[in-house]
Amino acid sequence: MNTSVGPLEWLMEWYRSNCDGDWEHQHGIRIGTLDNPGWYLEVDLENTSKDGCVLPRRLIERTEIDWVDVETKDNMFRAYGGPGNLGEIINLFAAFVESAAHE
Image (cartoon, rainbow, N blue to C red; front, side, top):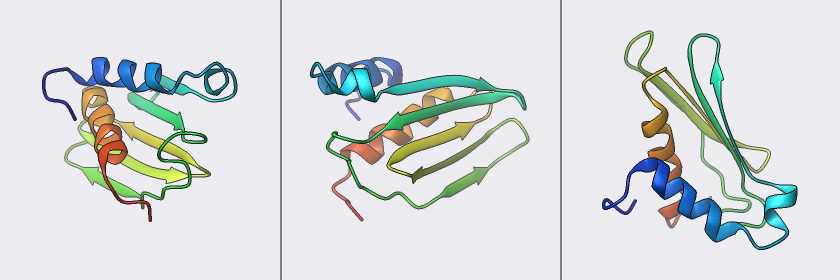
């Protein structure tokens, strides 16, 4: 991830770069809250540079409120985390996008 911008700015730029007049009407990004509490980030990968890429599930549990769970499933990047982990979740998506792997 470009270290000169924060996670949210990076995500906004990635979104903008994928808006082509079609993608944003059919696909997109969803960010919301969980009731346990926490955050989720879901990104539709269809027609992006990561279309079809696989990221095996990775669960990191540090404490009851400091955790992340990330994977791709059904051509969607899905990440969940504790109430203070939204930036980390976005950074994990950025690392996935910028990785060369296309398992």
